[in-house]
Length: 156
Length: 156
Picture (cartoon, rainbow over the protein chains, first blue to last red):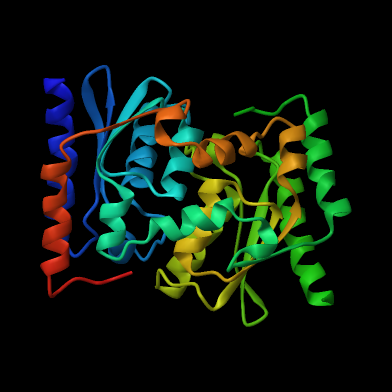
């Protein structure tokens, strides 16, 4: 428990320091066998990359370091509850435990409205603010059939 | 409409070709003023990056090219309905229109179970398969207060 607090404090420290670096107030660390293997802060504005949230950046770094897309033996400590994008990234990475500091209500209070995206995801496609339109389903399926039949694919 | 089909066919072509490149069967293009400004395929296994879905890769490329994290004047054409991570990335990028080919049922049929993540997102934190635990909320909030008071921040 003490270690968990120490690791969360590192994520919090990254979130605080990042404001001075011109970035958003978010930090995250990824831990394997009790050791930090990746630390990152939000770099959306500094890198001009809307996907560069702290958790996504940390997952990218950890995967690169371990040379695998499978982080199922890792934990993430993030200064704020993950947004849907980061939640998705965490699930795809295989991480099984998420420690977080601030929650989505705290984020909404300073105008990071992850809640809006959470609400949108739960809406049927036709009722979302972003317009979704399906096209050429019969042609798109060709790739899935080819994948299904491929014997040399790397599954993930 | 004809143009929409042409642009979707490009995304589909990327998805099909990517299988031969050792990647997953997904492709995406981002379009601004009728012109493709970024094209990408899934590179999770080739890059050892669980976040490297076609849509995320395309958003990163487009943002880099335009030198902005705001893609609200762009559209995305993706060979498959976005997973929650990519949906989140699309919302953060500001893209307002998403054209997709295959849907999440098609993806589930070849064992890309985005649906599992969609279901997890909708569950209360305590009922998810991934364990979520809040820690040090009183310390984490310091970054948000500092952000709120900062006069030099770049909002996004």
